[in-house]
Image (cartoon, rainbow, N blue to C red):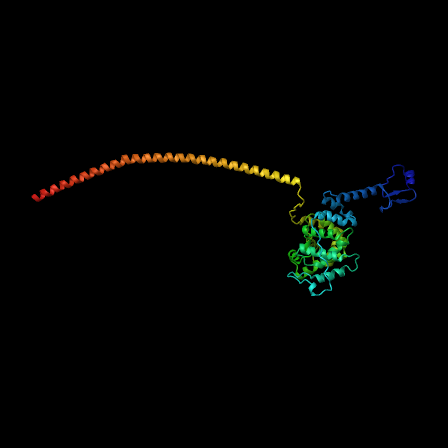
Length: 395
């Protein structure tokens, strides 16, 4: 065919055209089925491979670029991409073994229900055994360990059967392990409010206008149907969720209720199964984000860290020395000012004493002399008065 193209149409044959007209018939270009070796197809495949290879390396993930390429993700790489997006690889948490209690044991093997009405271990084990009956491999104990560890870490979890369905789905993904699934679910609950899916208390806060029976049945039933009957759509929703840092998964049921105008479970699942409707969740995840917790980078101390701390301590001591010297200088200035005030006060006191002496010597002596004069006059007037009385008596 290429020989006829070059023979009839020459070297300028439009090889990129979908159709080419020939004298006798219409030739249609075959659709690419990825089974042939073509420069265009090979370059696209290599570009996709290069993007995901760089993404899964130690390179910092770019969530905006992931949103553009998320539809090209391979199912085998999905869980690895999830753990890289959410950062659960670097989580310093370990899955502690708990062990399966004997489901046929007596009452001593049971844990009594607490005030929140949590499921007993025996009933949980029976549910896990029924769930994993047709599954190859020994994943029952792993599921129980993951659930009990999550119960310890997040006491608000109440729906353990729904949590078991989610963990079962994650364990069935390619290239997963119980430890990786535990870290991934832990990170989801920590950064994307995943606890609200399994907590009745959180649902009662987010559902304002719906009745109690409706909200306690519709949303768990929705998540159960979503993860069990539509696992591919659920995986696509998780893809979109992890592309937005701090996105709240509790906004999904509220979004579906607004879009469908009711609480019909079938309409919810049917609506979100459409890819264009699923992509609308991106705006909801982008607008309603959770507050990011303060991250503490835990690592082993090195000699360089010791030098940094020592340098900071020396700087702090120098600053303390400067502040102390400045304080001493200010106190000395205050002392000098007080000394000057003391000298001035002593001068004022001495001048006041001299003024008092002058007042005493001047005015007090004058008053004493005036008093003596008055006393003399009084004596003289008394003598004259006596003489006048004597003359009056003689007459």
